[in-house]
Length: 248
Ligand code: 13P
Image (cartoon, rainbow, N blue to C red):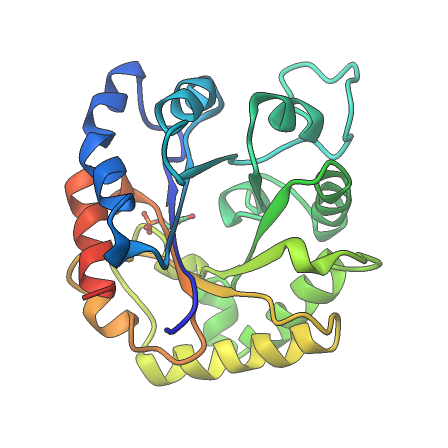
């Protein structure tokens, strides 16, 4: 990994205002020259975005929303947050297509609409793709990835603002990670599929049970530009450990 390395913290539905105190060490680390290549992005729950943005205001750490509505502006959509609102808060990123939202019924078509809306509002996208265990067992991984990429990016022009996060659904929260060889094959496949959509070399990230132990093997996977980290990112100590073990 020679260029920027992304360390993305997805806090999901966790965290309270008291969580902010634990971030001081991370802020200090992010300012060290040694970690210049580390691009750290936090995705707290919506309730904490404002606090995180203030907390990181004097650092290079960015903040994003974990999802957004497909309508880019204001509208009568109770309980929803639009790309315009995320942008207004100071978010630079949004996660779209996460399997935890796909499972709730978010379709490729809706994800495509969200991607277009968020790009229109100048947000950068972490676009999540990945196969379920059932699909993996049926050896359908590559066809699933193809479908998710083709449908999700249909008609999308400014792809340079998209990062791809490959998160096998069976790996999320399970403690299991793919075998290195299989992961490299899937990353190569994703690269090939993306190259048919855009001339830009979009970063491909890996997500799913990344922790401070398995990072020593994951960091050697060819073609990966960083990690999307769930539970291990909720502990600053573990998150810092992951960064330190990747860049040493
Ligand atoms: P875990 O790291 O907890 O497996 O979660 C991964 C994930 O879903 C990040 O978006």
